Amino acid sequence: MNVIRMIKIVSDRYPEKGMMDMGKAEDTLIATLLSARTTDKQVLRVYPVLRKRFPTMKALAEASLEELGVILRPIGFYNVKAKSVKALAKQLLDNFNGIVPHTIEELMTLPGVGRKTASCVLAYAFKIPAIAVDTHVFRVVHRLGWSKGKTPIEVERDLRAGIPEYLWIEVNRTIVQFGREICKPGRPQCEKCPLAKWCVYPNKPKI
Ligand code: SF4
Image 1 (tube, rainbow, N blue to C red):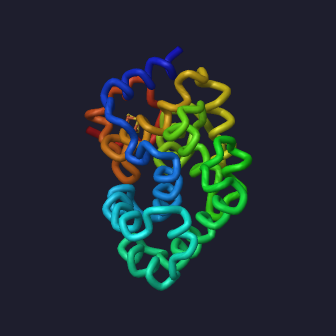
Image 2 (spheres, rainbow, N blue to C red):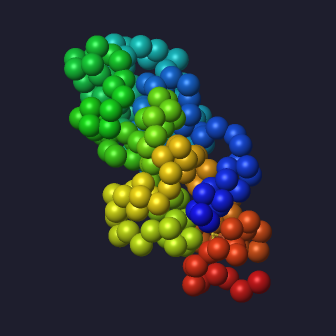
């Protein structure tokens, strides 16, 4: 099946771990939450500062919004993100004894955590098969013809149906990197693309 072959080609090209694969579940959870409307690189610059100042969930839950806002200012939407991080830490402590849950349903009860963030936590932190459909995955899989879904959940459903479960974790990690470097949002670099012969994107730039 070509989709399997394509994932393997991209996976070989990008063997490094995903940027949000941070080892500890709480780190992946909070960093992914903070990555909304900014770049992972910016989050990874700010995140160590945040955790140095507030190393425990209790410290984060009790942090002042003002101080959180100052630390989070470089990543934008810092007031909203400060409230989300504080509320998330509080609810993790209140409802889960400070331990990140490992089901999508429980994760999505946490403030600010949508399906994409929950799927990233499952895939990266717990190695549980899940497909996080972010903006890169959404764009690239449309161009490749893997899905015509109009929403992330429709795309996720198509990907789950068309890709064997053992490769689900690979989808976000590899396609995000491929989408950043080659199948870019503006002008895709089709001339360098290892998947070009399978791609059905009708607006490929002329080489
Ligand atoms: S051929 Fe171009 S549009 Fe298609 S996947 Fe490759 S980079 Fe993206």
